[in-house]
Image (cartoon, rainbow, N blue to C red):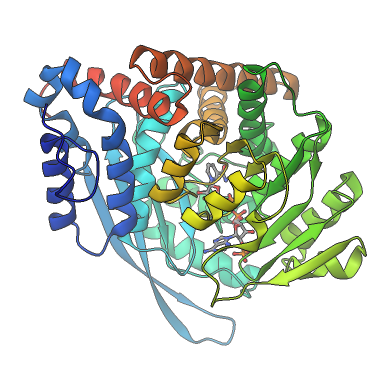
Length: 464
Ligand code: NDP
């Protein structure tokens, strides 16, 4: 297979370069989607070489085209009676392995390209969990910051008034993501139930007393830490005593910190979109409880952490800086848990230079392509998001099973299953990377293993 370095500065074969060029031409102004496709293609050339049947069946060409995209108007009224119009989306990317499954994101930066990248990643992530789930993603450019509970409720009801006809427990099962937590899932579920006249497991991340699963809240963060522990174990090490950098301060960050503290690691950073804190004394359960109250109940800013705890300093975001100073501290492990592309090439270099040799991505695609190459070239333990943060959707899958069986499993049972799934994802990545000639490369391992299962299902199901 010809490797053409000239076309786009990548190491892709002519075949993969053609796919990427076509994705870029057909989906202009969607750079995050291009990035996610390119990252997959960079791993997949050896697969296309070994399996020409995938090329003949145009599996990759089909995978980059969503099965269905729904875009709709969301009109709602604020507490003063003023009308607002937001845009709603659901990207139903691929259903080869099961009903579409993936979160809803509420953030002003949301546009179709962001949701297509997330839905594309979700297809392979869900495949890695071993559970029967296809991939999808949705959301809105609505900004929940500063909105009252009533405004959020009216917005969620308006969104679900359209979305309800496109989702269902055997069709498409949304969950939370950035800006969508227990409060929003509750409002969305209430409206679905009212319109569909059905109390069914159409969303995951539900409240514990109305169909939710224990450990779902914790699952993504816990899973990212279980993944880190597995990676360290390959070098005979554990998380005990490790100095860790965590970004974000939402659901994923909070439960990453929780598990890291439980396992004896020391966490010194957290952030939000305004800035970050560095606490040289490290977080402890009391400080974490403060963060949870601050973010989940008072909906305040991380700056207040440094006002409350004197061992911490706060650094506001400097829009003129190319790097993020959070990633420029001495540490051994990093857990990016905020958003996409929060680690660029400079940040990746800073991390490696400061001694970080493990990165487990709680967020989706938090590292740019340049950053990924730096981690891979430095041969650090680097688990990409689609493997490291798969624990969230895995427990969503377990929530679906419990709903279908009308059963509730104990906290220990769900945590045990989550742990097992993360161990399986880890060993699948390791074995697949080895099988394809790049031992220790978790990016290739995750991309190839995730792809193979979906590709084989698509081959079995014919040209659809
Ligand atoms: P939350 O909304 O609970 O928290 C998001 C955190 O990231 C907040 O601290 C937020 O700060 C910060 N953040 C969001 N957008 C930006 C931005 N553009 N720039 C800087 N900081 C930002 O979301 P989650 O914790 O659920 O999600 C975090 C990441 O994990 C996302 O990439 C998500 O896709 C991924 N993920 C989540 C899963 C889940 O189960 N929830 C599952 C798998 C992946 P601020 O409050 O200022 O906006």
